[in-house]
Length: 164
Image 1 (cartoon, rainbow, N blue to C red):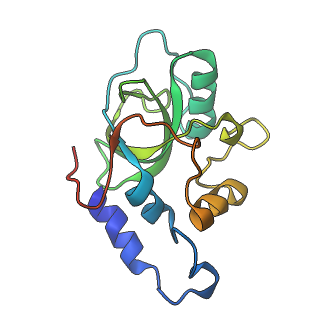
Image 2: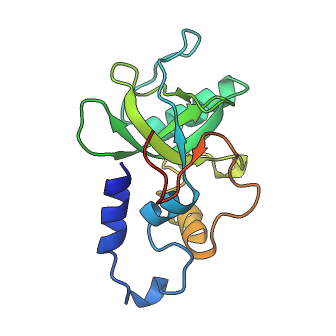
């Protein structure tokens, strides 16, 4: 997964003028700097599986209905797919994944941001993810992640750290 993130960052032209002064120029560089690894786990019996292709809304709903879980978003790599995809899930306080969308083929790897700021959650009117909506993504890329936006859950991911 780190190889994928680094490859995308390497493709971004350094001369792209509008984002030249931004803290992070891509979602991938944001995740390399601020993202965290999470431990894949099976879906707990008290969590209802939700429809595929609605991962952002599914994770937000699961977080709202199960206190103690936190919404997370980034990239996940399904065990049956050879590349990471944009995805959202929930995490427990100890960094285990609770994925209400991928119940039949839990992701083999998850890297993302555990979003502590509840104002950033997807909702029925804005079901896309934090890292997909310009109004939430661009400030994170331009200015970096403000204190209090994410939680210290999971293992920090830096370019020097090996995959779990």
